Image (cartoon, rainbow, N blue to C red; front, top):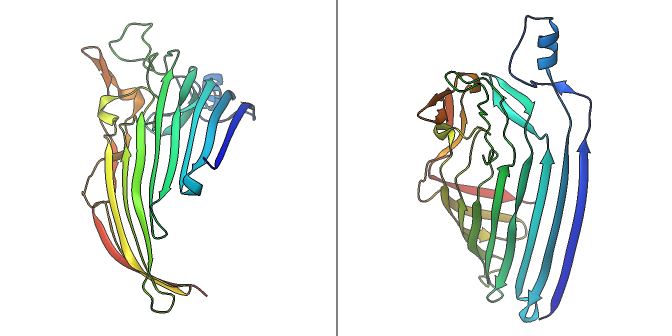
Length: 270
């Protein structure tokens, strides 16, 4: 082993800026009323976070392996809701913790392999009622304890290989990359509406080209597998209904990722 270090950090932040336009709780009164003015603001939040990790190099520097564990505790985090416009509210306590890995292996001067990944546990440790839900008990919490926060996959990783090979003609090099990326299921809303859940995404990207100090010519194909998944959705939160114990709402808009894309790029550096 050539190199080994460790790092640890602990931070505490208080986002205590003045209240900003948004929404605090359900209910708009008449324009100009105290209820209306109160609904246009949201409060501060604070975060306690820490990280502990190792950074290592092995085999005379040919292998790099870094690993870190992380933890964050949010109090009254600011969350996004839709009524149907995009609004902001203060949510219940949120806890996020997990493990991240980053690695690189230089097979030889021309080929290297890489891998990075994250495992994340994230949940609201308390529930709250953001909107009154038709047909639900008076004490029903639409943002339930145990819900996952939006856009936080449990598992994500990327892996691949890089190539740089001198052709022996001037300074021209053959360069290429094969990269695979996986992003697990994510939630769109803190209420975890099933209709708004984003499916896992598997992306394979390829690049191959020629490169010098002055120019590069690269052919590429992105999303080779043509995996198409929802990337964002909009569900008016206040129109959600409770059916057979499941809270859900109809989509008002949805967006998917770009399909398989092939192209050629030419770059000149001067």
